[in-house]
Amino acid sequence: MLQSVASVRDDIPGSDPRPSRTSLFIEVDDLAAVHRALGDWPRLVDQRDTFYGMRETIVRDPAGNDILFAQRIG
Image 1: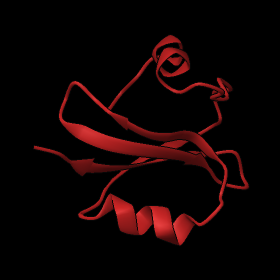
Image 2: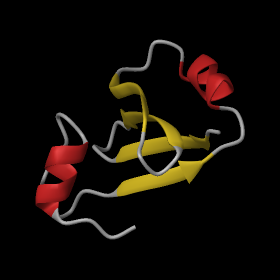
Image 3: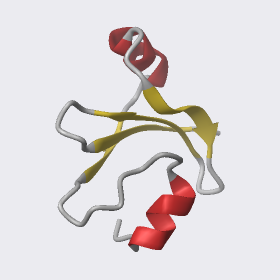
């Protein structure tokens, strides 16, 4: 997905708008298993359902990259 900086700011609360930052979108079969594996890792978005049919969780890695895990719903 290609998103503008303004779109990312609106979509991910607390996102870092610097141009060198990377965001990863990773589709998974079991988001609950990802939640368990993440443990108490801080989340930018704990969980949300999107208009495009995905349930998502977003975290930031130690290097400042946003990682979005998504599972299809419905």
